[in-house]
Structure formats: C-alpha cells, structure tokens
Image (cartoon, rainbow, N blue to C red; front, side, top):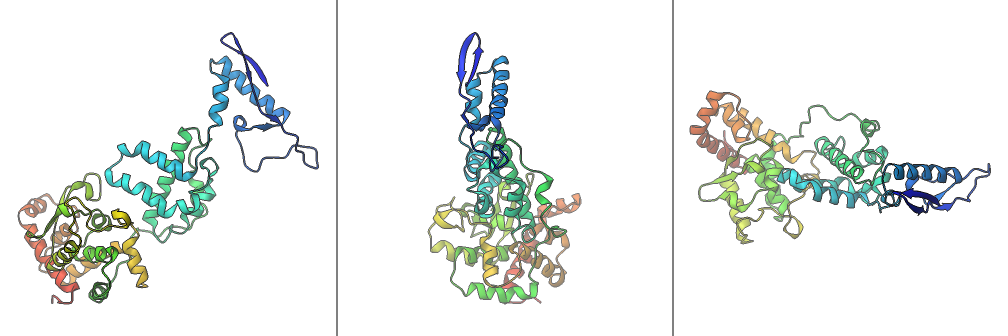
Length: 373
C-alpha cells in the first residue's frame, strides 16, 4: 500500500499482491510477457517500491495517483477491436475509397493472424508473419496492409493500449525482397479472346461478370468494384466515372466509352436485378462491395497466374500492335492516364472521345471473337 498526500489529503493507493513465486535460484519468476510496471498486480518487493515511486512522483506533479494507476489497467483490446476503433475515429479525414478499403484489406490479410491478439502484445515478428503470404505475391497490397497495421498500432499507442508505436524497419528483416517495378502479370492479348469465351460460358457470378466488364473497358479493378448504375448511360454508351472513383487524389472525372460487349453485359445483368440508381453494379455478400480478391480468384480458379489489373497491359499491347492508326495518346487516354503534352490534352477534349470509342469498340469485338485485323 502506498500512503501519500494529494493536495493536503491523505490517499491510500493499493499497489497489488506480493509475488511469492520463486525459481530454484530463489528469485521471483519472470512474467511470460513484458508487462508495464503500473499494470502489474502481482509484484516483488523491489517492483512494489518502483511502482510506488512512480505514483508518488505523479502525486507531487499534481496528478491523481489512483487515476494514473487505473489508467494503465484499462482493458487492452484485440487488434481487430483496435482496428475498428481506429477506423471509426480516423475515417472522416480519409478519402471515401481509402476509408472503405481500410477494414476490408485488414480483414482479408491481417485479421487471420493478428485479429485475436491483444494489441499491446503484437511484435514485429507477428506483423512479418501476417505479411509473408502476400509480400511477394501481392506487393502493392502488402505495402498497404503494412501501413494500415502501423496506423492501428500507432492509434493504440495514442490510446495507452500499447507502450510503443508500431515497429519500423524490423518488420521487413524477415521478408524477401519484393519484385522490382510493381508490374502486374498480364495475359498476352492473343490469349484474351479464348479466356473471355470460357468465362462468358460459365455461370454468371458477380466476380465473373465484373472481370468481363473490366476486360471490355480496360478499367482498374477498384474502378469496377466501385462502379454504380447511376454512372452508366446505356443509351449513350458511356460510363461517367466521378473523380472519387479514379486513381490518385487529384485525378479528374473520366468517361469510358462502352463497347457493344460491355453494353450487352450491363443490360443483361441489370435486367436480372432491377437495381436502384445508386446501387453498386457488382456486389458481394449482402450487397456489399466486392472484395479486391474476387476477380483474381476467377483467374486462380482457372489456374492462371495473371492479375486482373494486368488486362490493362493486354489492351495496351493490342492497341499498339493491332490499331496503329490510333495515336498513342488516345490509347493512354482510354486507360485514364494523364496525357503530359498540353497541346495534345487540348486536342483530347475535342476529338479523343470518338477515337477512344472506335478503339474500345474494336477491342470489345476482338476479345469476343470478332478479330480486328
């Protein structure tokens, strides 16, 4: 018991129970994990003196020693609970897309190994183990997950749930070097028509239809996953994507011209569902956004090593080799890449939309078996 005066009033502060466990050498047994001194409820005499000294100094500084002791005893949440708390507290300061993917990426790649661990006990080795499965297979996602784990642990530190911030460089010591360049494995464009025919002939799941739509439009997976019916003009043959759906914080809105193949897919998919305008086009369970793994799962099921994002490269290679009459900046604009030349950008506003329509119409015809030679 610590007896101390706080603002002239005597306070009795319980320090804990005497530790009577001993090793063969006569010393008290060490706890299985490192526990901060103020959180320890069973103490040796020297530990009790150390704890009393901390609380006595807190009292001299004008703090309430009981509050300081109990502050350290608050229940420490699991990583899953801490992640949910961090998401709720921080999401208003994030971009909408980043806020939506924060928890889903941790659910897919971190909760399996870290979710039920107390957040104060997570080490660099635990994080390394969680990242190992995707570190080289999905380097871009692995880097995002590592950053988001760090955000959760730093948030936990700010709440007093952890004694330290997230581990730094030590996390990657046990991980292999990631592939350089970060390129996605792309299917050769000559193989795309046969793959499209195979997927189109199978039962139309959300994952398969989303992947077909991605191929027809040369879009990014995140853009397809976030697409809503209100963005689609089936009569005009356009997909008007808002800036929030585009890659990069400063990316402008972008219009994708829809080929006959893309329009037919959407009409068929819409007719079966009768959706509301703001509904997602392709949904997962309970009408939620598709997981970022869904389209790649279609490729894995087909025993193919390619990445869904790589179909943009397939399209770009095909355009360069099979559509030489279409200028390169048009193909880049079809991919929503920024055109660096100011003169070309000015021309793009007036004429690129029709040239892109011609290009994507030909691509849609090609991948559906009507080769454009």
